Amino acid sequence: MPEEAHKRRSDRVSLSIPIRIRATDAKGQIFHERTQTQAISRYGAKILLGRSLPSQQEISILNLWTNREAQARVVGQMGISPDGYYYAVELCDTGFNLWGIDFPPSADTEQAAGRALLECAVCQAREVVLLNDLHLEVFQATQRLSRPCARCQETTVWTALLLGAEAAKAGADGKALEAARVASQPLREQRKSRRLEIHVAACLRTPLHGEEECMTENISRGGFCFKGHTLYGVGSLVEAAVPYVKGGANIFVPARIVWERELKEKSLCISGVSYLQSPDGRR
Image (tube, rainbow, N blue to C red; front, side):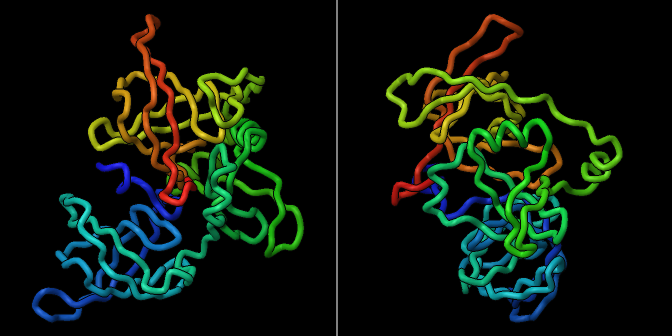
């Protein structure tokens, strides 16, 4: 995929939201279909439909979580599965919050070492939260953060949004993840930001290799280093989620493998990842 196509105006959250689609098929017949999103962003979504639709077709999307409804247009088909067709859709009114999730301004993402979809434990407000290195350390250790809630108008506990069986399992055993270790690292390779030794769960995703879960070795605002089992190839485009919560609503952002080398231990390799910037210089 070309690098320009990999850049996005908004973070994309891997989240399945039940929706109902109303549209007109190729025969001019109005149909309704209940389905779900595969991923969402401030401006649209990736959805699964059982019927083929042309690009620029207008559809109506009803969010069954929030009961909010909005018009959208089909940008294009993204693939086929046994259950139907994957489509990228864009909201006609990009200022309307169809998903009931607050996304941060694009200008702020440059300062983030990671991002996560968190939910207020008091009012259930949901927000894409940009995380600095300290936030990442706390989140990795406890899976929660204390932060201000605009709706509650006070500081509340925010937790990762878990889905389905993973949410039930987390509630049952409450297992905490390994605590992160933080130590300053010297600047290397003319990096634009300080790189810190932070061990956080992450995930890389490509069409060829699928998803690979890993732990970061160090992190900066511009990217991270990790050990894994896959040699992607220097220059390869990937999608990366930092932090990554198994069974959670994770945020994958476009990135590139900038260096890699094989290690002798257990057929591992170590790779450096750099986040891609949007055309206006933002991630």
